[in-house]
Length: 202
Image (cartoon, rainbow, N blue to C red; front, side, top):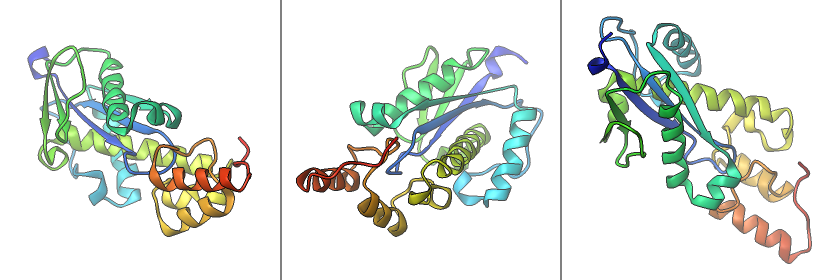
């Protein structure tokens, strides 16, 4: 495959949750090996995402993941953390692509040409593939972390601000996975401090 055809799609999962990392994926697909059914990960069922993620890992020319943890998200803000996760995903590819296509309106700093594409996960198969890998990777991790912090229900909501999650957060306080810079978590932290209460144990 010629380097001129090495176009990497990049997308993330986990910008909106109150807990857990933001995870990005970079995927280079072969132009002659199409994968049927690729689309925005949010338009797929969990089973459909899992199935396609396996195919993507097998058939992609290359793929890589990047991540930023909750404490660093708090330190640098979610936008900068997302861009860093994307840059790390691209840097992890075994071959530098000729171009990077990123879903959204902001571009990470990478060592090649990069273009932001609004709605890119619906327009470019490589971005759709990245969307799926990032989502499956993060969801799988949050399910595993549910065993460590069962009181929050991470396996069900993956850290997103559902009514169940907000209720558990108020009842138990935040755990080390929670993003303290996010308003609902910050409010609970401030309430705990005002009442002299601690947070959940690591």
